[in-house]
Length: 148
Image (cartoon, rainbow, N blue to C red):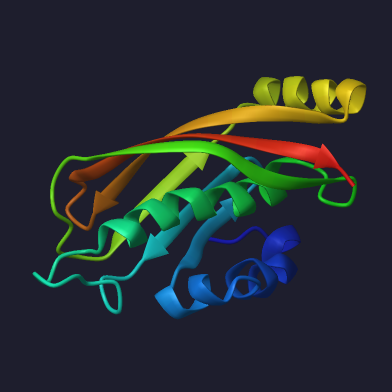
């Protein structure tokens, strides 16, 4: 479910980066401080018919943009990714999902630091799961918001 206040942002978030659109990544849920994203198996298959490793990485990296919009003031700041690491645990042979939530306290702390210093980092540990709920990979990322 997409919260009403975020519906106007979905076309921009899903279409701003051409490769994201070509990969078929879509936002399935978006509400205050929470986002769930879906990555379809096709067209993201590799030479052995499983999900391409680069696509799995990309869906995790992409989640930072919608999470930023769901959590922070996008009229005052913009997001960038600072670092990411991924551990592949099992091949994905279906569509996959990745979701994340930030606590109100975490958002408040990041916002306060950004207001004081002009930028602030936030971290997310993500699980990319197949349709049966099995974890296909683990992603650790650090994103940063900066003043416009």
